[in-house]
Image 1 (cartoon, helix red, strand yellow):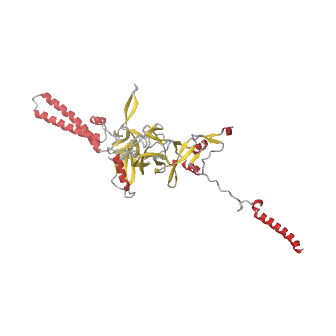
Image 2 (cartoon, rainbow, N blue to C red):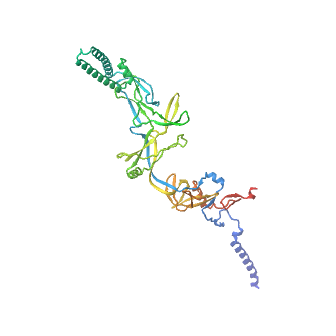
Image 3 (cartoon, one colour):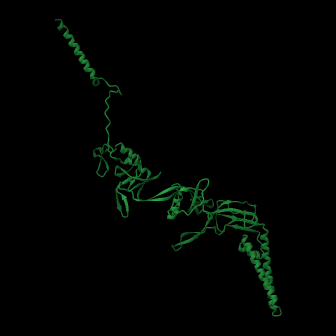
Length: 477
């Protein structure tokens, strides 16, 4: 009786404990979860296999400024970069104008920056030179004495046999001595800067007190240029254009006393210049080979792209290598001839000559050292690297595929890759081109998209067999 009375309460207690245990064990299903709870069930991310192909819409291509076209297999020259500078060509570009006699500068006809040609007067010099005045006097006296001697010879000859022949011979000898003196005085005056007309005037008694100092008729090493023109009949003819000089520096003033040989001004003609490169001792063999093989040097003048100058049609060949090394810079010089370009502008009523290349201008020289044959050349942005791997992207309408390539050479602006079959090619005449178009830029952006698995077709679009992306018809409505 007592045992039955305790069984029922115990059963109720056991039932309550069982329900409590089941509720505790299943609390994750019916208790509210706090944000960020450790017991939150997180599904693992879905892994997307990267196939190397991506789909890029037309708007995205325009945003990237995409450029893609087939590549042509060609030769590429491996070069070394050397710093250089435009300089005057020694003995050609500049020339000094000096005073031919002692005197005083009366007038200066041109100032620095003016354009002058052969024969243009630069200065007027008032003569104070005793040798010139003496030479003029001797020329006039000898000329007059010749006239007197000739008149005496005529009188003696008119007398006939009554005059001894020795008298005539004596007069003839005197005339020859005077003619020699006249010729000597003429040469002296011509060398002192007097013109032939001035000398003739001196012989007649018109002494010269001022002489013009003009631009020399020819500057050493300079030649006239031939300019193509059309004649009145319409047929092309060639006209010899006189060499134009610029008064670069003025070294005298009006009223200044100058001696023979004093420099009055500097004339410059930058038509013929040179590029002076500076290389190190261990690059000597490379430069010697460039001269031996007559390989042209690529010159980067670092000009603005909008400069209005014609294309440079000149092969830049190394002409000379110095046999001395600068003890401070530890470099040696080499020279490359440079033909300059010029144009005229009006400075008020006077023209001014502007040269494209100027002495002191810095340039960058790329000297050829090795030839790489049958390779592809791309901009640096067209290739992306991942460790030891290098990739380019080919385009098939809106589909882009990553292709591994072998990089032979890379610098800041260009990449050279081998034509080893990684990019399929076809022959067009004598040339070999890649079959797919190769992207020329944005390779790094494409590579990030390929690694992210952007090969899925965007929602609302479908892709054709040719790789083109199109919007679904129901989406268009």
